[in-house]
Length: 501
Ligand SMILES: NC(=O)c1ccc[n+]([C@@H]2O[C@H](COP(=O)([O-])OP(=O)(O)OC[C@H]3O[C@@H](n4cnc5c(N)ncnc54)[C@H](OP(=O)(O)O)[C@@H]3O)[C@@H](O)[C@H]2O)c1
Ligand SMILES: [Zn+2]
Ligand SMILES: [Zn+2]
Image 1 (tube, protein in one colour):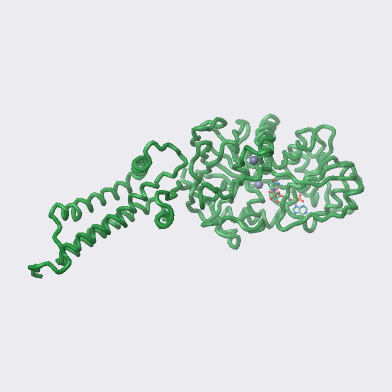
Image 2 (tube, helix red, strand yellow):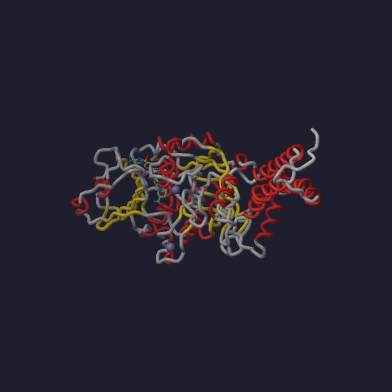
């Protein structure tokens, strides 16, 4: 094609230096940047973060804000301007094609480097562009086995999720194993109402692992220590309840999984069927050497939930205690009730677990399927802790209450789906008994319980299951469909294999 002698109307000549810069130097620099961001990502993120926020050592500010900003600036602003300027300066189609081709390669390079930050970053860029210049949330990612909706609660997907930013009081834990609680089922199958699923939710809140790193203000946990996390991961630590050893009743409490972090929009707490967890030190507990990890893990929810109502309601020598349901929580009720010195009875639906109950330290077992089962024990119990996860058939509240002595207490830790306790005032009048509930246990109680278990060599009865999509599906289905068959707690193990160490 012959070179046009005169420029088309509206065009103008750009100085040579300007053309060379935008046609050669700038695209090469952009490509080098993209390659560098791709292969030396950590260094690139740190460098650009430091450049955009000098002197900012607040670990809670998500690293990566600045990389997105710089990429975005290149993509949408400078390149567009350059294209417009260079193209308007000539009518020569060869220049047009060259410019478009080079810019396309540079753009693709930038997009490719962003891909390494996770697909979500594209969305965040758009969100940032629209609402808040300079504040693109970019989070570290962990891997978890997640459920996407209550309709598909038996299907687990191994996938990445955004972690809560690492904060001053946080402990980052590499998870080694995690017990399986009935609450996991109630949560993912929708039995407890709607939950934050977003792109997926990892449940599991009987976690043991190693403290990989601790925040600058952490004093309770040391890096490298073997630690555990239970069902709660945060509260205000400032209210009347928190200041009185009742942080599990704080109005602002957050669960280990399924709770929103209002400080970090879109971030939902994720549980122990994951590679790592970040938790405030108050809810991280050193595990005594005497307790193997898979033995300690189930104590962090099932154990403490049974232990707390026992000690708060005076279980000890001279007291007669009943535990309804010999499952995960129930078997700890027996182990701890007996260890505290109380005469502890199991109230089960059948006699099938009688031998086990006695091995755990029970004085005996009452089988509610037998006619008149409560008669010989009426008005003799000081305390009954119910761990039943079903208030339907087989759960006879009036008969349980008939066992209590005057002002004896019935405490439910079981939290069945869609259930109500129904009782006539008359059946409470015979012994003036009291009905209540209990939620987990405080940090002080957790440390006390772990020490008791270590000192008295109390071991959870555990069935180990290697963690995988299939095994989680099978295990949670089994817990749901065959309640009362598990002996007595499943614990997911072999995390190193599942998460490639
Ligand atoms: N309050 C809290 O802070 C807290 C914490 C953790 C868990 N929980 C809740 O505690 C409950 C128990 O959890 P888990 O993991 O221990 O479950 P689990 O291992 O399945 O044990 C539940 C036990 O309840 C008994 N049971 C089942 N159906 C019954 C019925 N119809 N009538 C009477 N008893 C029945 C069974 O014992 P038998 O076969 O011996 O009869 C079974 O072993 C769940 O609802 C869970 O969400 C509450
Ligand atoms: Zn639990
Ligand atoms: Zn509080």
